[in-house]
Length: 427
Image (cartoon, rainbow, N blue to C red; front, side, top):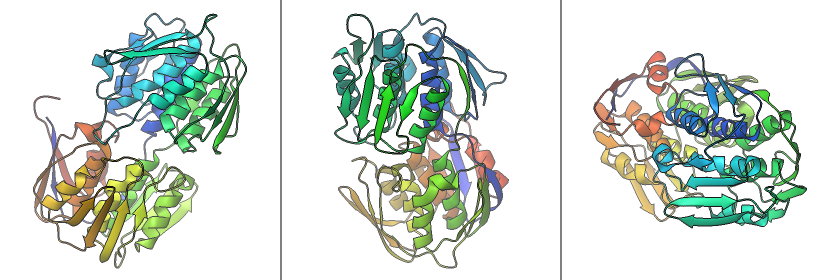
């Protein structure tokens, strides 16, 4: 397995260009299954999850064309779908496979999708997706690790009034896609408001879908008979942008972050400001972060958008280890998302965890050691900790970070970090 070796203590300076959003690219690729016409996608990040999704679409007999490997531009054509199935072998590392459920049900009226794998950060139940599809007339059974779903007689889902018990991003995206070709109107309440959901809506609308309410918690979808092809550019990755904002802050550096969307980063920018980090909006797509004269402890609670993203929690914890005073972090989205805390403690961090609350006392001088990445965003937190630790930090199981960060080693090296990838055997 590959590892990262980091020698800490380098001040990061320079410019970093942000890639497309993984969490937007996955649903828009799945949405290409909704039409027989070509869908052209741009700004797709070159990360492992997107390669897995392209293999999954190809298994279903969609034609996925690229001009280079890995690619940032895709053309997806699905004139017919002969395998309405997402097999475990293809999706065991990627929970986003569940996003094919809605399009398959809408397009062909049948789906067999493996229960998703992915990161070890706690339960992310798909029962909300299934309950909503049942309200639209689907018959669903779960057996032997697979969801088997069938549309009602006549082959078309029916519009319904759906109220999610809790906010679910992938659930919102799945039902949006299913409802786009359903009979009648679907009203979706307590819907996710994330920018990635809005990006999907923008693309679906280009394909001919009738959707209103973007950016709000109530979405209305009037089903149409068919959707057409389109061309779409994926939004920038706000989590990657936030990670590099913290990298600039934690190393006392001066980073210019380009190709980003500052409007999507409001909660992160505000919280870093409370911690003493100066961030300047240069223009509509560029931010500049400079290291604080003094980082100060700051409390943070993860929430659904537009709150502070759970995917930025590990990175904020790394920053808190270098801040003066106490930072209380409350994780409200996932119940098992502090696995990185024990690894940071091995590096010398003063962190105590009780349930969904972690308290960080700082500042502490971290020291390099060998740590293990447990999930995608935990890996990013450990990389940030390694950038300020004394000596050398070895991060194992970095295949997690490869799922969601395009060229992170190259981007960090480009702004002065002493980091290298060491190739090993295995996957």
